[in-house]
Image (cartoon, rainbow, N blue to C red; front, side, top):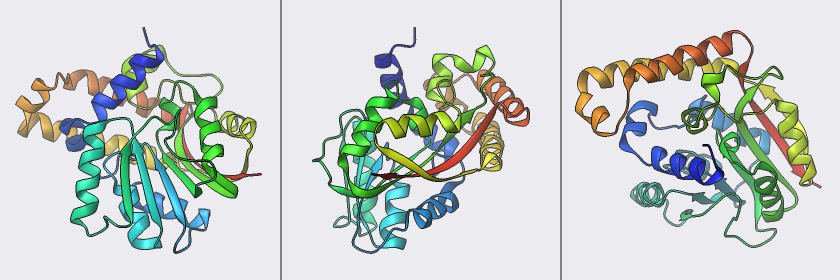
Length: 262
């Protein structure tokens, strides 16, 4: 049963594993660094601003924003091992004064009201069991006029095949994805008005292809690692085929959204 607690614990465990890093590479989201830069430019980030990176993962986005846009970044993630790795990477890059990571839940952000000029969240909102609660938290920590920048998986109104709505699909950022306008509605109820959106389905297809290639390579070169982590490569390939077909059929996509706090 996919309870909120199960979803959160499975996501935290999966995305803190070395296997995920092996398969997904540096960026855990479609579009990689290029789409993060586009998001940051659309947010209008400026030197000296304070940014919150929600579900920050291993910190690739935070490091890019601090290095290329001159902002300070607070990163929050549910998995403590991931947070530790992200902070070590930031410190090793000489960014310890600009980036701070801590363990926290997007639905209970450990920050004061109106603390941030911008909030960034990439390929994670769709996994949150209580999206309205998380959206309200984003709005709470944003200053008036502050902006939210989000990229995420989207689905068509007709929904997805049953196999793409399981607990495994939750962890893969698919099962509870919503249509783009529904994301906008959720944010609007929290006081965040959508200012701009654009689709990037091609980025999702490229990531699917990259995952397939990396899993093939991992099975040839790191089979014991996959087995030790309980990864069934054949099952992964089945999900990959289903996801690719869903994108091709227009049932699954990827979008960017900019919203502003009233």
